[in-house]
Image (cartoon, rainbow, N blue to C red; front, side, top):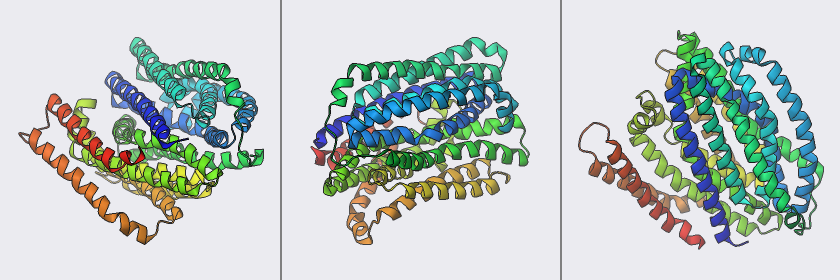
Length: 493
């Protein structure tokens, strides 16, 4: 498979993820204006629990994608076997959560979450099956149908959620938000129907592809799934811990339950959404390039695997730098025009370079997984979570450090995990010195471009008007995109 096809797949994946993120961002903005900071806090805490439960099996779709990329016919066999197990285990778990929603909401520290937990229970049955089907399609490099299913799921989820909340707002924030989360299972069922019909139609074309020479055994699949599941579970586990820890430490600092929920909503329901949004491009690149690296590694073509890895890391550097400087400089405009509040701007500035750090972590993790180096990303994330929990425990409860403490923990988690992965990749000082000058050129170009545009569009100390902000943003990202094309993308053509 030639590299231009990789670029096409990455572009499709990135475009779909961009649209999914935009739908999600628009939905979050509308949701925030419907239910306020406290309502978005309830939503975010419930989703933290939901994400943690889903990630118990989060490594299985990724392992299936890697296995299918290496040996397509064996990937089809794995899909059929694992689907049966997921139907049984997912059904039991979903029923347990639904019937014990009041107990679980008590564990989460907020009885008002009972309705949200109950509404999310059916999704715990449907979403893993959807993820498994997507994992198989990812391994077959069928990026287009994955993109369509993600867009359909996200659009349906937020459309039904907002309609339900709007209609049931008279019941109160707790019930309205809770019942609105039934939109999650509606979106998942629609998307699952779409991908299963696609697989059924193309089944014969998929299963007759000749596998690679080295067979993949079930033991390999189980071991890989467990390690990747453990690694993937750490991020939702961290978010779940944050939901409990930060709320409790804010209570210890003297805030009421309502105030603590609202502060948590500002951090994780607003600021984190903004700063993590640019990582959709590096996530799309990681999603597609990992399959190509795995296939090249399986075939013994280490030179191509190394070339793809270097390209992905350099693209991550350029995009993270462009987005990080923009978030830092224009945090006020982003906070005001997206959420209609000034409460989010400082948190955005604290976390401005999350796109760069997270991009490095995601790309390096995909590279290591493709090389069957599975344990090190897990230990890197685990170390980051331990450091983050310690920082947040002590800082969040201090007067004036509610936002700063939470942001410091998020940064520490991502930074430790990324540094751990780079240590495993064995980047030599000689190679770092060799690329230092080009990286400085990149930094100078992006800084000068942003400074020049800021001087051109700013006429006072106040924030930019909406139209000036949009025009400045388009100009900045257009110039940066052209620069990225000539610095990296053009070399692939």
